[in-house]
Amino acid sequence: MRPQMMFVGLIVLALLFASCSKDYSKYIKVQEQRVGDYSITILSSSGEINKGTGDLLLEFRKIPTAELVNVSNLNLSAVMQMAGNPMSGELLASETGTPGRFVIKYNFGMTGTYNLKITFENGLQAQFVLFIN
Ligand SMILES: [Cu+2]
Image 1: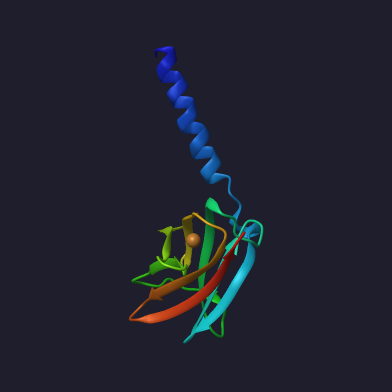
Image 2: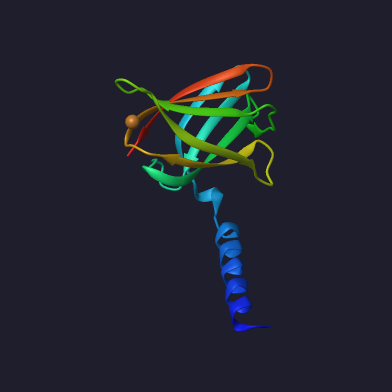
């Protein structure tokens, strides 16, 4: 193996380790909302959301058992209402090993208030107002 290849290999390993070492059980609730028979929770590592890039957890639980349940047709959008042109936040949801728990990679370009719209299953809808620090 050439030294350059080993270097690249080490970086890949480091990235893998970083993504696996996240302890989502330590994430703190930011907001919670009920929609139909579901309780939807947004969590972050600090309990707050900061401008720029980062990740959130999105959890769907069934009422009244509070058990995590998988949902289909998940769709997310975040828009900041600004004078003139509304501004979108970038959101990318991916499944975790746990049913009903999604990791959301985000990019919020500005501090302030974003309206987060979540649709899932057959047209169920939640609207969160998120403050980005
Ligand atoms: Cu803005």
